[in-house]
Amino acid sequence: MTKPPATITKQVAYIYYELEALVDANKLRAYTNRIRIAENTHVGMELANAAFNESRQLLNDACQAIVRNKKVILQHQGSQADCPDELTRGIVDQAELDYLERRSSLNKAVLGINQKLSDINTQLVAMIGEILKTNDELLEYNLDSLVSGDQFAQQDYAETLSQIERVDELTTENLDKHQAVFEKAQDNLDSLEGVYDSATRNKEALLELRGRVDAQKEKITHMWGHVEAQQEFCFDLIQESD
Image (cartoon, rainbow, N blue to C red; front, side, top):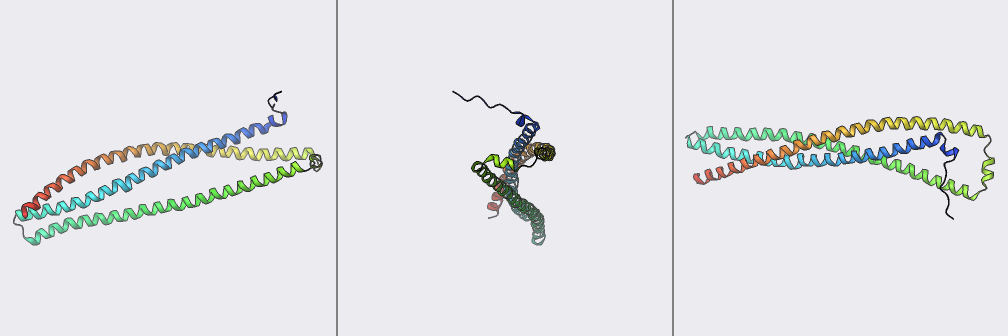
């Protein structure tokens, strides 16, 4: 004979059932939020890598190639115009100094970005510490609950019930705790809504940034076509002078 499905008793169906539903729903929302935040983090780091390591490096290499081409062109033009060597050298040096000034400013910007990345790592270390602390607390709670369950299983439950002095005091205590848990759950729900909205805004902002990164990559590709054409021109000038 199959066992009939369990029915919800009055004790379970009382106000605690609604509270349990709220708390469990908050848990589900929290994990859903975390998934979206994790996705945003992954996309953000991907875009940061594309902009900072890929596009920036291509731009840096192009910057060096362009100033090298420019010096060759200036020297050739100075020679063709019978410009005094000292003046030609000064014009070429000016181009080099312009590049070095830009490079120095970029170095400072890189240092600033490195500091921000280091700050993110510091926050990550602190966050992982908080996660581990919470895990330890939950682990301890579970172990205590297991011990408590073993104790209930091994002793006379009638004796346990006899230790409760007054049922009305237990009921009052439970109702007070219910109110406290409900208020905490409601606060958590409000926080979840705020985090969800923030994650949604971040996702939209990242989509916009992806568009900018892709557009920038396309411009860099076209720029390198120009750089390479100018390099070929400079090679021809060098061969002519030889």
